[in-house]
Amino acid sequence: MEGGVRRWLVDISLWDPSPAQFSSFLALLPKYEHPAILRLIFGFLLFCNHLMTMSDARFLKLDDRKRALVSRLLQYSLVHEVLDIPHAEIKIKRTIEGKPYLNNSRQHVRYPNFNFSVSHSGNYVGIASEPVCLVGLDIVSDVLRQESSLNFINDFSSYFTHLEWKNITNAGNSNHTLSEFYRYWALKEAYVKALGNGLGYKLDRLEFHHIGWSNISVYVDGEESRDWKFWLFDLDEKHLVILLLSVCLSIHLSIYL
Image 1 (tube, rainbow, N blue to C red):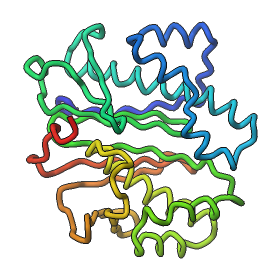
Image 2: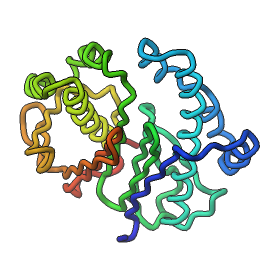
Image 3: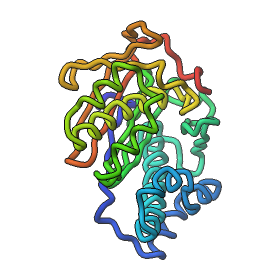
């Protein structure tokens, strides 16, 4: 790939590390990264607790830690490979909204505008990097029980425009409706992750248009933005990934630093 461009995807579904193995991998990371990996991600469980049993929750606690660990390992490995910075010298921090970024001195970085985006959901952990353009990545997995899906997505109607919500609710049966919801949601997530704004960004400002989920474009506050390119991939029946890149080179990494 072109210098600075990476696309890595890891399927963690068959990885079942022992506590000792998990600890050995964790030890490869700086100690300040450990708490975020070891703690239970309460927000996600609160997000889904009315849809899950206690056994589901225990499973997700372990699986979340595994995803978080692999995500961190990918970040440090990618920075080391692309920028040739020794592992011990890599400094990755996060914005208030949670976007990771490289905090090493720009004078010593091969690509001053280097940035990356990470995502993990279900069986997959992914990372994408760019030397110049802003990049956003979002992976979505279907974690909802079908009988609860329609009630669940109704709570999110305010995040979509009238056109988007119409397309979601008129998609067909519950499977099609849920698939449509996830696709629009992943596009919005990838967009705000590229900007580094997090969910503080009013998602209903964005309206996505597409032709059969290709030729995807975005309207911001009602005006079409030609600053972005979008790709949507179905990884399998339960996972999809959105990748977006800025095409306007005047958009600089400093907007979220």
